[in-house]
Image (cartoon, rainbow, N blue to C red; front, top):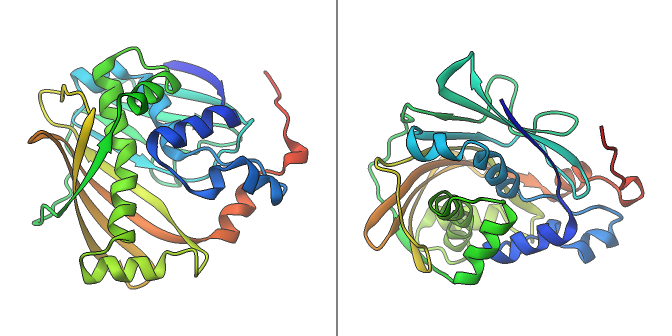
Length: 273
């Protein structure tokens, strides 16, 4: 088992959001302070640091990454990141980010790297959403997740940046279902998109690339429950080479529910073990 104890601070969270172009107000100190709340840690920030514990397994063995986001972390939380073989077998690695509970698990499932591919299927490659990438974004991301392997850092950046491709599809809709999602998940209705789960297939050999310049995300949405639950199939490429394919399950969550899970500023303290 590998472990790492971290504290996600406001400064690092703001830097991560700038690097990944995440403009959600729940990560903004001034906005959250007006509500008496601490800012919320981006799920991809905690996930990237946790996956980085198994960088060699990811790069050499893994064919898939399954992710579940069960709860939220707030700035100042003392979190134990863990990476451990499942049942002592080195074909699967469990990933955890534990505060009061494991934020990367659910009742029946947990986040994992595996040597097996996931089984999701989609007959559609999707519509292209090209995102520009600067060297500064990538270097900041690499520093913040404390990744020493450049190939792993670039891969994890591509995964984290995919959130912006999904939002771009919703904000600049080109299909009927994208319009529907945009009308459902909006500030006007005080509903925000939240990842229910995420399945990623990793190509072999492990993708070696430099994302500077741009990344191409091909996005295709499917409706599972009208006005409630949607699937997004994402195909990421760089200069024609596949970086990953993914299946997201997106659910709309009321902003009041999200803010209730954020911890209050007056309780902002760190207890070290």
